[in-house]
Length: 74
Length: 316
Image (tube, rainbow over all chains, first blue to last red; front, top):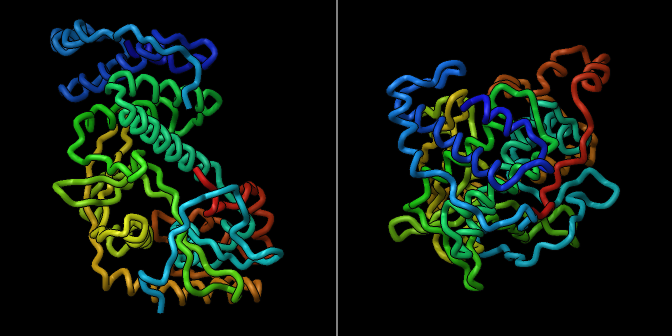
């Protein structure tokens, strides 16, 4: 998960899709949820039962399809 | 002595203009940042406000704070436009990603990923914010309020002093209105951290300004502080109150500071306050002021760059 987030963060704005932006939000929320649960994120193994229990909360909280385009709003 | 009745709220904030009298270093438009510089150390004020020296670290801190504020501002506007939380966050984060595309500082805490994380943390934490944004008479949310308050006196008879600034947000909490100010820090907010806001130049100015703008008694502000850590950004909040007497005292003292600043500018003499060098986590110019006077120029040019002068009149 961390690697995917790092990759998304490194992307240039011109390459972002709405899904990429949604995924950034979801990945960060997952990281924060793990932190709140007392699990320090590890870059190698993230498959412990405790981690899976926390991440399971997000299965039904996948990003909704967004109707917005990448056109700047402000 | 200036009183709260002696000022005029200027509703229209127009194009950028200089905060200095033409062809002088006499500043007539003051915000909390420039006031803080002159109160701390005239030499610091000179380096920052007259020459415009900035370190890379200051640049990063400034940009981090500005982007954080802008994103929360965007989010509040979207919420006020009846867009739901997740959609508003998505749009605000998208704007943030676009604005910061070229901004990739190599700072341990104040970097792009931690900025985005801090915004998400804040918005989720305060999704059901007990502090409700005040709606102005024209129906717009009271966020990022730029103000200019004209004093009854000035550096010349023709030019009054102007107090200016930007209030992050006006909120109502338990039936009382407060201004809200966002801060970010890399240290743990202890009692010492919260105590620093009273007395506090910016907080008193903003209490005063909020009273004038909203023409109603505002007792103080709510400070929301985000502690940037490696794995998390932790938000806490504190309140700070001012009495009318404290505000009047601040305004009275202000006249002294403005006279002093004008005198320094007229004489082009900026004395060093060597009792302030170790305050506020250590002055950024300490490494320069600790050198012999004859070689300071060489060091300051190596470690700092000249940026456009901080302009209190700049609209956001």
